[in-house]
Image (cartoon, rainbow, N blue to C red; front, side, top):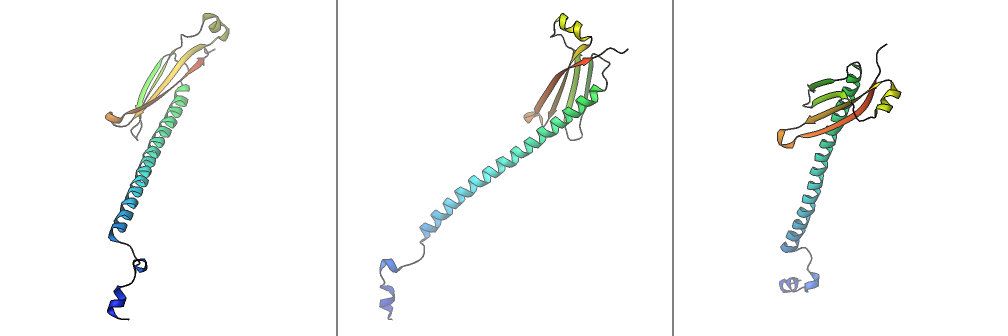
Length: 140
């Protein structure tokens, strides 16, 4: 095969990719990868937030159980902090939303208990609160 024959092959016989095609493929690949990385970062952030809310609910539940052991006082306010940076505040006060007829039939005093859990930095502070109505029976 002579030199002239080697280079005179038709356009259909040329194989391989041009530089433009390679650059376009890299641009498409980088756009797809950036979307995938953004989705991954968002899911990690959401997972961390969910873990914080779960921890706050666990703290609230344990504090409500702890405070229910002191069932003799009608008014109670306690505050504290957790080692993980969670602050909590428990408030018990007499419940005034029931009618007098309902209260006489119970022979117990209704109290409203509320707990607030907060955490995070000042600019991104998060807070949840739970409340319930409990009955305190007079001691015999």
